[in-house]
Image 1 (spheres, rainbow over the protein chains, first blue to last red):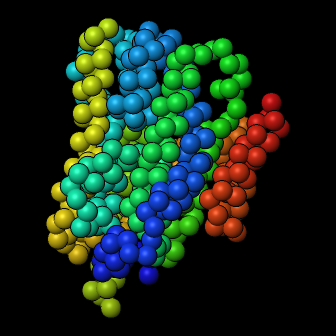
Image 2 (tube, rainbow over the protein chains, first blue to last red):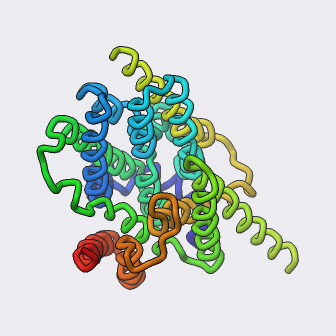
Length: 248
Length: 106
């Protein structure tokens, strides 16, 4: 069963006696190529937008290097342009990025027995996309946390490089933002989602979460839809599973 | 100028905390079994929750029409994902499909 967490196996996997860390790192970086394409396209757009909004090249790139969170950066640029208060910008960023809490929690059981500094470093790279890739990989038998370092570093480099290119070259590259390269991200989500739909309850969970997310996105401001839909769908699915087990 | 950099720095701090804290706190704690069973549904739920607005919303309104190139391209993308179960082939097929759809719509 893919869904259960075989804790003992994970410990063995993380002990890394058979898996070579360098190889896993390379594998992780390679798997992240779709993320890199999507991130590059989006971050160039971000760079251009940020400069238009009056941020300096330093500020534009610093935000990508330090904050490294797509949606929040686009929102913050808009708020900077509207000269909103620093506290409003910081609070919005916090709320928009709160969804990573769920992803980090979901990854935690797989990373037992790792040093605190390692965990803190692994945490820097959690984004929607790297989480998606890692959660699919963690479900497999063979896994080493250097895979996560690989995906994280590759994705992060693409995001920062794209931001710099966008900030410096700006609108000098016509058509670059016209290419629908950002579709690499939904395409990747589709692939990773399909891979993880291994039983009927998971399929129901996905349909439920997708529908709820859509509904909340239309009804609520901000991106609360992701957290709310995820928590609701997972709770309903887990509750249903427990009820089924108890009643027969 | 300097103020913006401070705001960016504060943004970095409030972004990093939710990313790091559960990993650091929970990875070395005994997690209750019920919670683990709940966590099993999180990846699939997050993916679906992220994906559906990307495909079905345009400017915060529902867009189920042939003019939505992302939605159109998602159909062959899903089929390829189902058949191949391969990330690279699926993403490549998706990109080809979206370019093709946008070409048809333009």
